[in-house]
Structure formats: structure tokens, C-alpha cells
Image (cartoon, rainbow, N blue to C red):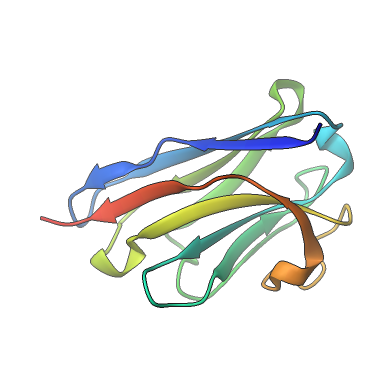
Length: 126
């Protein structure tokens, strides 16, 4: 069955970096765009970035643009999220999700995704 498993979360100081991984199984990763979402307590889930099936196109929400980088290795069935210059407001549970299409159509909308990981906690605090 389709599975997405996030890892790499943890506690980091402001200004620090983390790299999240999303390991995919049960389907051909190269056939789908993958997105990352995050949800802080008391807020709605926010779509922050997406990468097309080939990796040739990436999109970011303004709040992470220039600080976060999404990438993928289809041979390793893994998508990555490199997060730099982290801020306390980046604290959230981070989820990867499989888009229903190979391109990042409406990447910010969770309705475009049909499979989700369980999430990994990222806490940015001194």
C-alpha cells in the first residue's frame, strides 16, 4: 500500500538548519509531485512547497521562499526538505503528501493530495 514516512524533525535553535526526509513506498515516486505541509497548534494546515515528478519544477510559499529547498531522489524513493535560517514561527508538525498529479497544480491546497505521512515535529526555540 502507499506509504509516506517523514523523518528528521527535532529541536533546533533559531537560525539553525534541519533536513527532513520523506520516504515513499508502495507506488512509483517518479510519477507524482510531492508537497510538504505544516501545521502549528491552533492553525490550519499550510502548504509550503511542492516538487514536480521529475524535479524540474519547484514552488514555495512566501513564508519559506529563500530559506527552504525541496528536492527529490526518485532512485532512492525519497523527497527532502532542507530548512535553513529557521525561525520560531517555523515550529510545527511537518507532513509530506503525494499530489494527485505529476505537476504541482494548486500546491497549497490539501485537496490536491491523496496520501499523507504521519508527520514529524519541528521545534525552533532557544
